[in-house]
Length: 428
Image 1 (tube, rainbow, N blue to C red):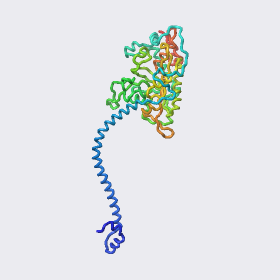
Image 2 (image 1 turned 180 degrees about the horizontal axis):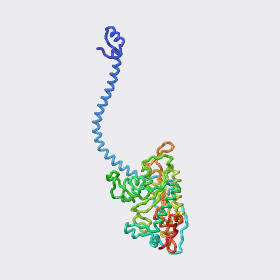
Image 3 (image 1 turned 45 degrees about the horizontal axis):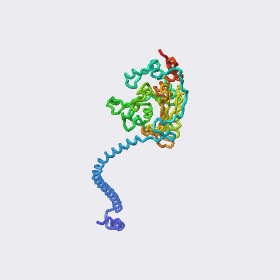
């Protein structure tokens, strides 16, 4: 037979021979089939090469697998260490944050209201509460232990009036009210920074873990750990976890009423008497989610503080505002204020609220984003502020508005929430 190469190169000669010899053959068809053959051969050779390569990879894979078995545990250790260090990285601080080491370096920036002067021997809120039969600390300790308390009679109405006043004030200011869960998964507390590390640590985190087990919807035992919140801030912020919001939804303004629980492990020996530092109380909290604009967040932060100042003024409570120094701010805060009401028995001010700007520190932990006008995904900025807690304004009202006859005058702003609109709590 002839060589195919020769045939390709001498097609006319071959056709002439076919014709002259009266051979039944279509040379063009042959050449076309040849092209297909070559193409298929090339494909087969490529596949065979890949197959050989695969066999080599398998052999190499055994060695790679051994290396992976050694490297993967090392990687897990390093990754864990990385994450543990990462959660400790603090947020930056604002340019106007005072530099200091402790609360002694906080700076007073505002003071308002006239400190009352009494022409009689004043009582502290403990004695006032006992005399008016609106507070029972002895039975509280008997039933609940250290820092336990009972609020009774008109004291209940006064404390609930504070909460109703605060909720309605925030609604008037354009905040949407919520009653959030107070029993939450750890992610909500980690996300908002109430765990100092990756996991809950009872030695440093002032959070109560619920020891009893729980059931899932399918009846199986839950593996999720549950915790009691110390503020509505955690469940309000976590409401949007793992969501991407639209720019037009922002800012989102929320206020949450909740029971709050704090172990106060870091406050051993402090404020051991009365209601100033207790394990459980009620509180109204405000939370804002907004666009990632630092200057706008500072303005929002200041606006939130103004609401607290307005509330203290309407309640007739002398107050001061502190700008919190770097050494007194938690890791996640960019900028913070405290507001304090005058408490006669302390002969000084006592903290009644705290306003904090976290920028996107919390949002990154909770994975809350929004799409801006340019279609870019960004983490929202989160801010929060205490509207009113139940115990400390209660203390301030009892002590600032006590009368010589032992009665207590109720601030006018609260009277519409009191039964019958009473203006005074008097001895029975």
